[in-house]
Image (cartoon, rainbow, N blue to C red; front, side, top):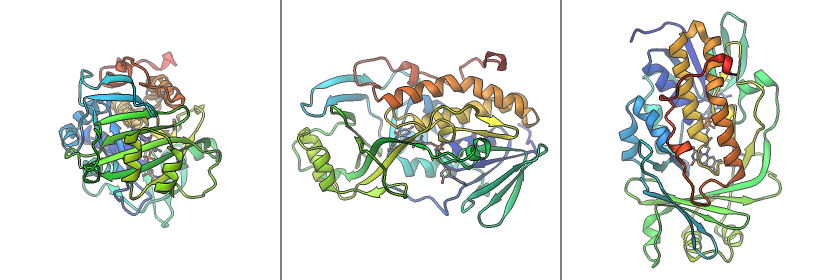
Length: 378
Ligand code: FAD
């Protein structure tokens, strides 16, 4: 493929931005990625990557490496958090690619490694955007600036690109928090209990999702959804404790008690939301992932939607070239809005896979097999 000389700038090297960069570079575009963090560390969190995402990883040749660093559960079990009864047993094969659960930091590092050397710039916090119609100037907090022909805002729920397009608006606090903890599998050996590969424990008003985060199955991870009336902190997350977990899950199943007893460190994250945005792009600026459709994470598909967005946006830009960006951005929104909104709605409702159901509409989806709807379908 011939190299194109016009420049694409991506803001944010999170799970969506890094994949957008890798896919666009793979298609021959000239792309730089600007990330505010000075570097990425291996924070204590896992993530599901469904077959819908693995099909995209295959496109830029990283799928086998993702599988190699992941646990690959055969089923998603839903169980009653109090009695342990099985509410559903959902097979995770048969959707055209592997279902993975993985450490978020390992995945992010692998994704960033796919970017061409010298194109990922850390310590670049975007503070100002000027789209003058001909090109876009980006200013960073460190006083530097760059020019680009188009800009992709993959800068998460507090997106500066979203703010530029729609004005400042705080995200909505959902009234829920998620606790996250990684547990050494070694610690679980003393219990005469079976720790399943991928299981969601459901209570009347709270849940705990649990899975392995490595192919070696030496790290077990839980993430909760627990009601919490107000988020009173300024930071992205705060420390929680074994005692707090014990009180939140008092009376729950012995496996949950064993997990809490084995917890060394646990953090607590507020779950934020936004209502669907009136636009996904304007002029030379376009958004993807949490910048345009953040959701409560209960379907484990938030990053997946960011990555599907990245793949569809790349497809549309391949169709039009950068000079046809206005058409590409409209095509992209027409071909993504319904699916992203449906997933956002189901995820926020926290009902996915509670009962036996067919998840093909989520996992069987192949972004490359979708016929492109035309702009007029909007
Ligand atoms: P982000 O991953 O948030 O990345 C945005 C990036 O932009 C960050 O690196 C940030 O530093 C950078 N940035 C922000 N502002 C600027 C700026 N001004 N200048 C430069 N850089 C900037 N999703 C799943 O698919 N599966 C799961 O299992 C799952 N579990 C979750 C569990 C919890 C508790 C939570 C809270 C979320 C979970 N999600 C899950 C959702 C998922 O984390 C998000 O949907 C996903 O990270 C969105 O990706 P993104 O690339 O859009 O944004």
